[in-house]
Length: 159
Image 1 (tube, rainbow, N blue to C red):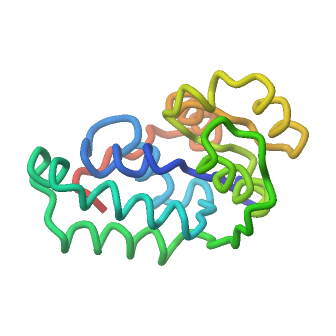
Image 2: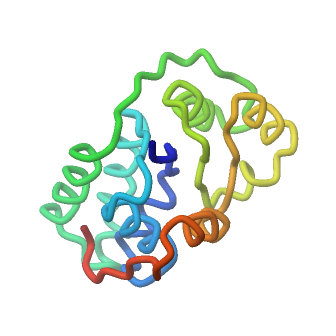
């Protein structure tokens, strides 16, 4: 069975905006079937919201059809889990839904670029009690290398 991973919004957005960076390597490894992704509706909504911001679209030349295609990739391959707001305790209330999705979906990793999540020791311990490790993109990519026995994929392109 593949390891289940919850990928934070900031990683998904970075993967699309920088197709050669570590977040894109993570996305490509997922597309290649090296792990399963857990996602919840609030994360999908946040990805769409961030990518549709005029400042982002101007700076990165992202078009609506690319955003739609990207969201279809995620929704078509990821495991969608419900969230009800039962997890609390994060400084950022939006992060509570992320943690709940990781726990509900049986994720072994929550991959994020959010320093607030990665440095909150109480949160890290709470998540570990549920079997979830909060890690950076590079930390997670290192866990894949022993499993894959080959270079991680470095596809070009947004999806």
